[in-house]
Image (cartoon, rainbow, N blue to C red; front, side, top):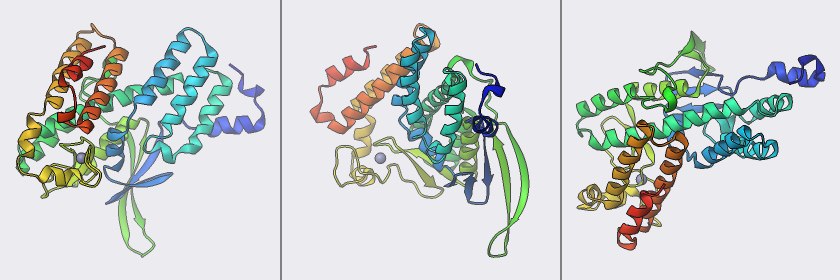
Length: 330
Ligand SMILES: [Zn+2]
């Protein structure tokens, strides 16, 4: 590691100006979240992260880790490059690309300097992947009336961070921030109150984003057909999203789902049933530690891909026995 005095003046400036990748400030107004590089609806980033496919990222992270422990510097660098590409494709970070200069500065001082950053991001991704499962499960099991819904989302908040890999933090999860309260004058002369929050972790931010959405009676909901996350306002009761449905070219999930008898068909869908059963089995192994964290992650990604492929192909066109066998392979 070089001494700071060995750096050129521009490198020194870069180092002094660099900020840890997970630290950022957000201003929360009545209806928007403003950050240094973007302006978002409440829930937009939470939903974006829950839908983001982190498979490539996790792969790159595993390769980074292996290369690090075996001290294969070139392989490490190649894997880190791929992890970094993926990181800046994630919601929020795709608007923060100027922070890449900070990562390059770290790397120049120590080739392995960014390993901790990626480890933290990987753990956060795993927690979110897990939470996505919790959300899907809770929404499908919840009572359809408003009271049932409010209760379910309340419980859902308290389960944020549940089953974090390696006991990442103490339960219950508590978002920690520094908050300033301000009243701002807008261009039209009116005054608005806002809070300026300093975050040190992505999960703290996403928890607050979810909380603020629920407070505004806007709820994240997994589509019962394609499982992407959409937002539901209080009073409306859609079960399906408005994206094009799997296996369809024009029809949306909402249109397909509106067909009579579709709901019962879905409840008894063997693609989901077999996936759920396999999930419970592998999850138990993870908890009992007869399976490593990375093996479980690998299985989870593979199984989800298999499931989504099968849903796309359609029940009539797949070999269900073959599907079951593949789900249970490690
Ligand atoms: Zn859908």
